[in-house]
Length: 558
Image (tube, helix red, strand yellow):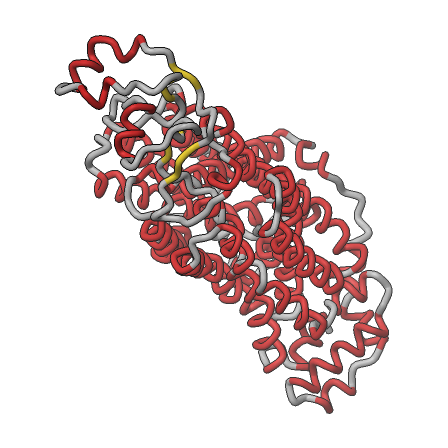
């Protein structure tokens, strides 16, 4: 009898699993709210230098005209003003001719008295709170980079700690850390304090997601993992729509940050109810508690009599294979042991990095489209729904490799074409960006499954951990690339578009896995070879979606 048989005995899809999965999926709804919070909390409103402090006139328009020059776009410049008020501009019959003749030679200075912000769209953002404009504009992107850095650190930290101390206790800590970190960020008194608590939120987010997915997949049978995995993936998509609605109703960054953090207090409270993974308990030599948990599941599912039949010997016998596998001595270095493994690791690293890099590059710069950021957030979130459906069908019919290559190359092409579209054609620009973002969402869905099928069982956890780290690194770098647009507006788009195309070429060198059995050892991977060298397939009757990768994919998807 295997552990899956024991799970069937106590009820594998009963009331316990339904309630368990539902409650664990709730925090995932708020995951997008923190990942994409920057779009609203750090929105840059129209602004210009504040007039000289010693001026007092009834007409604000006259003061502005006399103190702030106009830029080439006909609007007040954002970062310069006249060193001395130019009252003659008010008396001139032709301000345009005066500008052409000599305004450029007038002495200028920085915004010594601060800035004036148009707060019709957002009543307050971190930009207006701490004047993150002009010479300090790079700090806006730094705040998102530090947050993603926290996500990266949290994945490494909480991943290891959960294997040592258990999923449940780390989930409790992560929920509390997210709630407290978000609350403290909302009431930060300095930008440094805000970034510090956002790092804490990023770390906690990794802990919530990793441990939630672990508890989900370790209490459900293999046959429903694909369905549950898809459902939890759509929770993130739904979360993007929720963020747009909440941000539309709450226009102050402090209250918005607090609003997306408070639900984690609720998650912390009901997380005490969760049962620790029986699989983890057995592997850490806590079999007695595992038996108690299984009997509790049986009671909740209405199978008390079946649960009473389970004893310590039966449980240890069912987990014999897993306990043997856990004693292996493999490490991350095995990802590069052979030439085939090196090729797979390098190519997958490029795929994951560029997918995350371009995804967050597009998703974190909504203001450039010139339409309502609330509307574009809804559109960007909704496009994930058909994108994931299309790529699922494509992976089943065309294969993993063409689906992965196609999604990446098409995303890159859409982003590059957008560079050639005039700024005035906002509908066309937005449509191309939405298609590109949908392709990147499809690429994410594909690479989760594809990677789990490429890596052998003995190092699948290490492999998925590595490529997930590359994705988080890409998310860290993405905001900083936007700074290159200050001097060359076309450069960020060129980089965001070029990266997926290059990685799409890398993906071509990966072997196809559709219709093939999962590799268990590194030797199995070498025997299969690379797809562009050996396209021979070994049919496998068993549905690959019911194999172990779904467990690993769910656990590692942050």
